[in-house]
Amino acid sequence: MRYLLLSFLMAFSVVAFAQKTYIYCGQLVDTKNTTMLKEMTIVVEKNKIIDVQKGYTVATAADKTIDLKAYTVMPGLIDCHVHIDHETNPNRMLAFQQNKADIAFGSIQYSKTTLMAGFTTVRDLGGSVSIAVRNAINKGQIVGPRVYTAGKIISSTGGHGDATNGLREDLMNISELNSDVVNGVDECIKAVRQRYKEGADLIKICSTGGVLSLEKDGSGAQFSEEEIRAIVTTAKDYGMRVACHAHGAEGIKRAVRAGVTSIEHGTYIDDEAIALMKQMGTYHVPTIIAGKSVADSAKKPGYFPEIIATKATTVGGLIQGAFAKSYKAGVKIAFGTDAGVYAHGKNWMEFEYMTQAGMPILECIKAATVNASDLIGVSDDLGTIEKGKLADIVAVDGDPTKDVKVMGKMVFVMKDGVVYKSTK
Image (cartoon, rainbow, N blue to C red; front, side, top):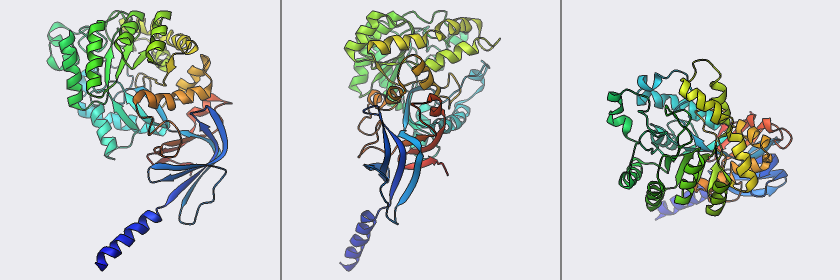
C-alpha cells in the first residue's frame, strides 16, 4: 500500500511539474484572421500548444524559453502537393537504374530539406516509396515533415500516370509498370481499395494528360465522369479524399462534378469550371513554381525529350495566370508546389509567385496553413497557433508583409513540440 501511494505521488509530481516551453514572438501571424500580432508568447507542453498570451510571459526557473523576438512566427507550413521520393533530373535512365531502396535513401535527404524549409506537413501526391517514408518519419527513424500520402496514383491507359507511355511493346506489358493503370468502373473501385490496403491516406487520380509524361497531349480528358465518380464514392467509403491532377477544362469539370476534393494545377480552367468549383467547394492547388520550373528546364538542350519540352514550354507558362483567375473569382485556394518537379526546399518560392498574381502574402500564408489543413482534413490539430493544437511552429528572419522573400529565410522549425532548427 505504501509503495502504491509513493508511486502515485511520484507520477503526480511529474504531471504537476512538467516542463513548459515559452516561445517569445516579436511578430506572430494570426492565420485565422490574416493579421499580424506583436509581442506574443506561445506556451508549449510536450507536443501541444497550451496557451497563447499577449506580451512576454515570465517563465519559471523550471521552464524553458525560446527567444524569437527578432523574428516573425507562424504555424508550421503545409505543402499540399509534393513528391517526396524524387527530384527533377535530366537522366531519363534513372527510372530503369534505381531500385526502391535507392529511391528510399534519396527520400531521406528530400524529407529533411523540406522540414528545414519550414514545411512541417506535406501531402504527397504520388510515389513508389512514399508510404514507407511516411512510416519511417512517424517512427522517428528519419527526419521529415508529417506526411499524408496517396501512394501510387491512379491513371487510365495511356494517361499521365501510365509509366509505359513511349516504351516499346514488350515493356508496355510488364505488370509492375501497369499497376496504377485502370479502365472502367470496376477497375477504378478495385484500385481505390488496393490503395487503402497498401496504407494510402488519400487517393490521387489524373483526369487529364500531363507535362512530364511521354504522352502527346497534356490537356485532354482521360477518365469518364462515371469512372471518377466511382473512385470518389469508394474513397469516401474508406475515409479518403481524392486529389485530381487536371490541366484541361473538360477534365477539371468532370472531376469537380464527380466530387473530387481538389484540382491540382488547373492550367486551362475556364469560367464554367470555376463556377462548378465554387458551387462544390473544390480546392484549387495551383503549383505555380512547378510550371515555371519545367518551362525553364525546357530551355536547356536535352533536359527533356522533345515531346515533354514542347508541353512544358506551353503549359508551364500558363499556370500562374490560371491561379490568378480562380483566386480572383473566389475559388478556395490551398498552397501546393509539386516539389520534386523542382528542387526540394525551394517550396517557399510559391509564395512569391502567388503574391505576383494578386494574393496578399498573409492570405498566401493562410492558404499554406488554415486552408491546407482543411483540405487534408486535419484542422483540429494544425493550421493555426491556438490552445489545443499540435506544436508545429516556425519563424522567418524578417517581415513577409514587407518582403515576401523572407519566407525563404527560415530560422526556426518546431514540429510536434520538437525543435529541428534553432536560431542558436
